[in-house]
Amino acid sequence: MAQPTFEQFFSAIAEQESGGRYSAMGVMTGGDRAYGKYQIMGANIPSWTAKYYGKRLSPSQFLNSPAAQEATARGVLKSYYNKYGARGAASAWYSGSPNLDQSTKSQYGGPSVKGYVDSVISKSYGYPSSGGGSSVNTSSTSIGTGYAATAAKPMTAAESAESYGFVQSLFNSNAELKKLFNQAVKGQWTPEKFQASLRDTKWFKTHDIKERAYLTKQYGDPASAKQELSQAYVHARQLANQLGLQETSSSKKMIDGWAYNIVAHGWTDEQLRYDMGKHITFGGDVHQGEGGDDIDKLQAFSYSMGVKMSGKWYADAGRAMVRGVAAQQDYEDVIRRQAKALFPTWSKQLDAGQTVADIASPYMQSMSQILELPAGSINLYDSTIKKALQSKDPQTGANSVMPIWQVENNLRSDDRWKSTKNAQDSMMQTAHQVLADFGVKY
Image (cartoon, rainbow, N blue to C red; front, top):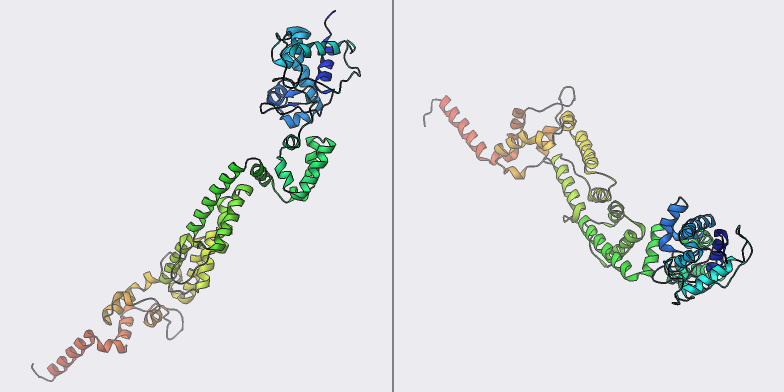
């Protein structure tokens, strides 16, 4: 008997493999399974579809595309048929080799190679030579070792869940998902139909794509998910300490939440900083972490500008800088404006980058020398220094610069000057001069 035409052979393969069903899926063997009407193994789908369909598809995309299944199977089987003939092509499709059609060795769950080839050839003659026809064998018996597989054996619930891209334990953890999954299994839904229904669930709408992927890993590969979460916790804890968050029982719970946001939502350090900064507190004179360092710098700048800010102002500024919503310069500008309001005479100098401490330095040196005070005991809040810096013209009332000599004269009128050695020496010198004026020699 003449060998069947390619169209007869092509139709027979579809009948043998799946009963002509595009949605057919084989059992999982060796970490892979077969898909579609012609039962092409998942590992072959990306390269075969790229070659014969023009698009590189995943197994799930392939399963949902009858056109891709037809084009891909036709391209591969036609090359086999032209090279090996009908029997060799059937053997190659089933076993991977065109020369095993006499083998009596059975494939997993299916017939021997010879039995498979004989069945395909026999079915071929039931189709018209031009292809097509209605002959369908819904009880297919073939399972391929790398090229074809059977859909005769129904999938388990776990395998069905895997075909949808999830794991069964995840579906069982949520009543809404479990109900939908059971409906899908019972109705033998395609992955496309299941995904469409899944998108309408409350669970899907309240979990972004990254969180869905992490939850799938958490139930499907709990060891890896736990390790990933543990690493995220260490990172979140280190960052919290670095920013100045004090460790308490409540902060540990917050770190748990930040770790989950890292693995399940992809939070960056910027996002972590923004949220952590809300919970950092500063008390007394001890400031911890980056926030504390920022506060110390602001306080030092405030001191150099002769400006006093409240503890709450510093704490709020520290949190804002940690969260990344403001910079040190922003708060220094606030302090500078305060200083310009207090010392308007020196506005240009302050805008040019000088501090009030720079401007007051000559006055403070004179005060230290004349009143014989330690340099460190004089600051910008001293009434004498502030009066010198806030000088006004006595006639016009306009802001004016007080000359050093005037500051020194004013200091000699200070009660503190009377008890200094400078004052005593000055009075002694004056007394000697008076006596000398009267001709008294001493």
